[in-house]
Image (cartoon, rainbow, N blue to C red; front, side):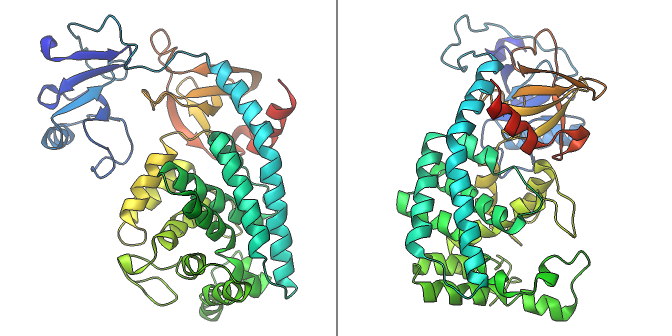
Length: 411
């Protein structure tokens, strides 16, 4: 067997799928894992059913021997693998880069959020949003994102619990722009995505606040009122002079591929691409935020909900692209480690996505401890610590808003 197994790096072995055994941990496939039956990248082959499933799909796979339950040996390991692995930097560098990036990105984030608040309040007073002003703010965000995507997406994960409508619009807008940049869209299309993200729920400002903040299920009459908000959004945006692409993205963002959406019940490709994207991002940010009627999900659970709803509730291709963009453990995510410690993801290892860089803020007994940054990939050889689960913001009294503030204030 060993002559067919190739060491890619210290944590990864490449082998033919035919040589897989029950008990091996598969960390990568020979094809994009999106579109396969395996929801998240990285899984243990627990039985022959899973084994046969992998063998039927792949010619070869990548196995993590440290997380496997059977011993694996390789022959002819590379003496120089500098072409296949990332540069080796301590996690403290990632923490410092996060601090510098957040300090640089925060002014743009705050100015745009203030503009969103001003626009929304003006609409409630009967005024119309200004296309030129909103476009200028989105352009500033695009410039900030181009320079520092991790910091801006980190900020999109911070929730204050008292400004949901403003922050929700801001977060959807940021995610839409990040998605467009990730996919290589022209700047004009990224700008349209950002504007649609800011404005898609504008029509809800015409609804009674008692409906928007109601903790119980809505009555049929109340639900009918909610379903009218895309029409109000279209009216406001058309009267303000926004581009047709933005108006349509906002108007149709509650449509579904299976035709069960609203306001008109369009099916699949009849719905504009940007509207299909906003629907996904709207759901994702809502699911990961505490609301009057629902507790926030973890990123993993929200992504799983999107994945399960693909092709029926959400565009399947866009869901898969979004999951690929977010990664397994997004920067700014609170996680629990196999050591019992709790930390915040501060960086990624793109050749070992299951072993991120983490800033530990709680000890094994969940006690407060001096913060230290670790790269789980680097310590894997002598201390095999891994992420066991994602946590909600506020778990064990760790709040991302407070952590971010402290990070920017202190070196």
